[in-house]
Each structure stands twice: as structure tokens, then as C-alpha cells.
Amino acid sequence: MKGRPPMEPPHPARDVLDHVGYRLKKAHSALRGAMDTALRAHGLTVPQYSCLEVLAARPGLSNAELARATFVTRQSMNVVLRGLQREGLIERPDTVETGRARPTTLTAEGLRKLQASRSAVYAIEARMIEAIPDGRLDALLEDFDRMAEALGG
Image 1: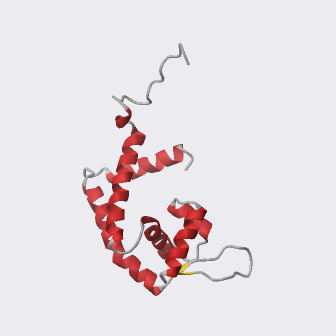
Image 2: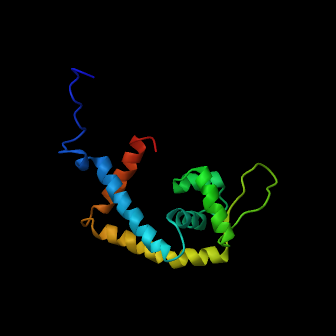
Image 3: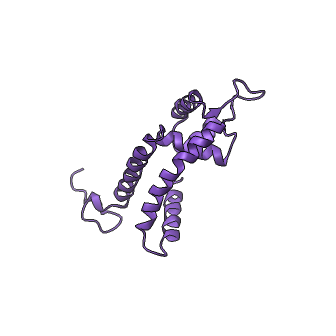
């Protein structure tokens, strides 16, 4: 609109590359790229690995619960689950007595695959943490939680 003053950024920034959202996305992109590379060697994708991790901690979750926990759509989770089931890494009943939700659990092979790939992912997280100055990790994690809460997450 003509005559309207430009909106000021929410904090001092030279340009978009200095904005919090941009820097957060840059860190996420670096993490995702490192995880993609590491997990490829184990025959997994990031969503598949995330699903295995969540199921190890919370066996019996439904498709919708897994989708929420791994930040993908229910439709995408259907694809992930079909692939993991085809590989013999998870089990889901063909039918359930009540409702439509089919609880999912890891198989012994799924747990083995998770444990084999976990060290690669933990090594990536360790590299990230090493870059954070001593004593600042807890504050950073709290800041992430506050940002998510501020946006309704």
C-alpha cells in the first residue's frame, strides 16, 4: 500500500538472514542434512528413524499419535508405517476390536535397526551440543520450548 511506513523487524537485523526464524531454519536444515546422510547408511529416512525412536519410548501408538510425535501428516505417516512394516521393523494388527486406531510396536528387527542407527544420530547431536558454550544448553532448550509455546505449539 502506498504511503504506509515499512514495518520494523521485531529485533535489530540487517536483513532476513539475521532473523531468528531464518537462523532456526538454517540450523534445522543442517541437522536434517546430517541426519539424512547418516541414516542413509542404515537404510532409513529421518521420518522412519523418528518413528522407531518414538515407538521404542511409547509402544502401541496409533498412526495419528505417531504423526503428531514425529511432525508429519497422517498421510505421510501411513507411507512411513507401510514401509517399516514391509521391512519387518514394526507390527500392526490387521484389525482392532474397537475404533479404527491400530497400535504399532517395534519388532526385534526394528529394535536392532534402531540401536544400530542411534549412535550415528547421537553423534550428530553431540557435535551440535559441543558448539554450544558451557552452561548454555539448558537455557537454549528452554528458549526453544518458549518459542514453540509462543506460536501455539
